[in-house]
Image (cartoon, rainbow, N blue to C red):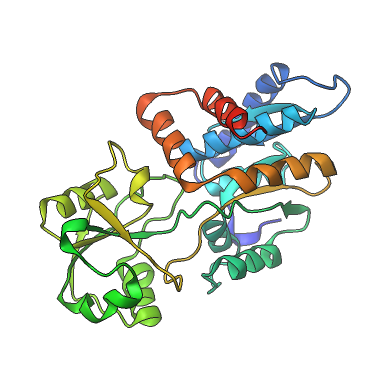
Length: 311
C-alpha cells in the first residue's frame, strides 16, 4: 500500500512478527470497558516520544469506553507504518513533517496547513488522520546563547548570517525516528531560500548535545538542532534562547494521530482531537525527558497528564 517509500529493513519481517506478539500479549491486559468490543491497539516506534504519545492515546480512548492496548518498540517509521497497513495496530502517532517526507519525498510544503494538506493527499487508501496537536512545535531549531544578544527571528538575523559561527548537528538526531540533517539540503538551502541567510562559517557536530556544549562554551554563536533544546538530555540551560522561524524555513512538525479508516467511532476520534487540543511542546518535552533519561513509566506519565487536563 505504501509503495517504495515505506519498506522493511534487513530485519523488518522479524520486527513486525515480534510486534504482533507484543500486541497479542498487550491485548490480554488491556484496559477493558466493553468486553464485546474490539481491542484498539496503539502502536509506537522506537522513541520515547512515540511511547509517551501512544500511552496518552490509549489512555484517552480507554476513558472513552474502549478496550485498548499499547504495542511499543515497533521499530522505524517504515516498520510501524507497515504494521498499521497490515492492521497489526489500529492507531499510531507521527510528526506531520516527517510523515509527509516518508509518504511524498519530493513534497516542498513547510508551513503547518500546507504540510497537513500534503499528508492528506499522500495518505494511502485505508488510512486517515485526526486533528494535529497545534500546540506542539517540534521543528529543527536554531538556538543561541542569550549573551550573544542575537535578533529574535531568522528574518532579522539574516543580514548577520555570514559573520556567525554556526554549528549543525549532522549525526543521529536526539529522537531516533527523525531523519538526520543534511547540512546543505536541510539547513543552508532552506535558510538561504527563505530568509537570504547565507551561512559561511559552519562546524558539524555528531549530535545535539555536542552542538549545545559548543554553543555554551562560546565555540559557536548559534546551533542548528534536530529538536527544540528542551528535548535534550540534562537540565535546559537558562542561558539559551531559540531564534524564531516565522516563515518556516524548517518544515512544520506537529504530533498527529494516524489510524485505520473506520476503526474508531466518532466519540473515540473526538477524544483524540481533545488530546490534540491540549498537548503542548513543553508538556511533551518534560515527559520525553522523564522516560528517556529517568526511566519513568510512560503509562504513569500519560495517566497523570490526562488527569491534569480532565481527559
